[in-house]
Length: 556
Image (cartoon, rainbow, N blue to C red; front, side, top):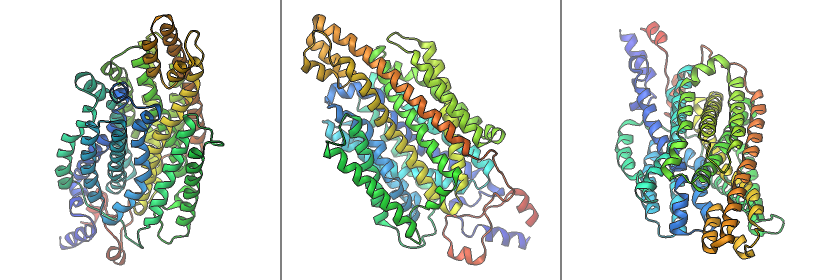
C-alpha cells in the first residue's frame, strides 16, 4: 500500500490543486472543468452575434453612418482576434485563471457601457473593450481542455461538447437579441451580460484550475504587440477596400494594410529567431495543423458573414420581427448541436480527411440551396438550408479543432489554442468584412440610377437597404415606391451573389481538407509521458501527469 501511495503522490506533484482527482479515482472532475469552460465560451460566442438582429434598431436610434455601423458590428471580433496571442501567452506567464477572471470583469464593465451608449462612437469603444475582454477569456478554454483531456478519444468527446456550445452561442445570440429588442430596447442585448458576469466571477475563481506554462525565457512583449497591431491593420485595410476604397488612390487604406503586412512578416521572422517564441511556428510545418487552421478560418468566414446578411434579409426584405428572425435561425442551432454531440463517433469512423471534406461539401450545398430565396417568404427552403448548413459547418469546425489540438503537445497547447481562437475570430471578422463588401458591391448598382429618383437620394440609398427605405419614405409618391422596389430587388441580387462566393470558398476548403490525415490515430501512448524527477522539478504546472485506470491498477 505504501508503494501505491507514493506513486499517486508522485503523479500529482506537478498538478494544480483543483485538478487533483482527475485521474482514475476522480475522473468526474475534469468534466466539471469542461462545464465551466463551456459556460465561458458560451458567453463570448453569444456576444459575437447577439447584436446582429439589433442592427436596425441601433441604426434607427443612434443613426450611425455606413462605416460606423460596420465598425459597431465588426470591431468586437477584430479586436478579440488581434489580442488573443497577447493574452494567451500572458496567461501562460501570470496564470490563465487570473487573466480569465480579469476578462470577466472587463467584459461586464464594457457591457454596461455598451448598453447605455449615447452615440455610435461610444458604442464602438464599448464593443472594442468587449473584444479585449473576450480575448482574455477565450484562450483558456482550449488550452485547459487540452491539458485536462490527454486521451484523444475523451478529448474528441470534450471538443464535441465544446464546439456544440460554441455553435449554440453563435446561433442563440440572434434569438436572444431578437427577444430583447422586441420586448425592451437594443441596449438590453448587452445588459444581459451583467448577471452572467456576477455569477461567473466567483464560480470561476472557485472551480477553475490555475495553471501556467513552463515560463522559460522572457515574455516577448514586443512580439505580442507586433502581432496585435499587424492583424488589426491588415483587417482594417481589407474593411476599407470592402467599403469601396481604392487601395491605389486611398492612402488611409493602403498605408495601414502595408504596415500590417510588414508587421506580421517581422513578427514571423522574430518568432523564428527567438529561443523561446510566443508561438511555435514549427506547428505550421505539419500539414494537419496548418490545414486545420485554414479550415477554421474558411468555415467561420462563411458562417458569420452569412448570418449577418441573413438577419438583414429576414427583417428588411421579408418584414419579420427581430424575435421571428431569431426563431428562423434556430434550426441552424439544433443541427450544429447534433453535429457536435455525435462528432466524436463520426470522427473515429470516418477520419479527419473525410469528415472535414464532407462538412464543407454539405455547407456549400446548403448555401447554394439558399439562392432560392427571393422577395417572398419560403419557410421550407430556409429551414432545410439552415439545417444542412448548421450540421455541415459544425462537422467541419469540430474535426478541424480536434485535428489541430492533436498536433500540439501539452507543452504547446497554449500557443495552439491561441492560434485556433485567433483563426476563429479572424475568420468571423474577415467574413463580415469580405462578404459584406461583396454584398455592397452587388447591391449598389441596383439603386444608383432609379428613374425619377435624384442622384443625391440614390447615393444615400446605396449605403444599405435600411438607408434606402428611409430615403424612399422621405421621397414618397411614385419615386419613393420605385426606390423601395429597386432596393429590395438589388438586395436579393446581392444576397445571391454573396451566397455564390461563399459556396466557392467552402468548396476550396473541401479540397484543402483532402490533405488531412485519413484516419484518427489513437495510439496507446496518447497519454502524456510521465515526467522524470528533473522534469518535475523544472517544469511548470502546464503538464499535469495522468494515467488511465489500467495503469493505476497495475501500480497498485
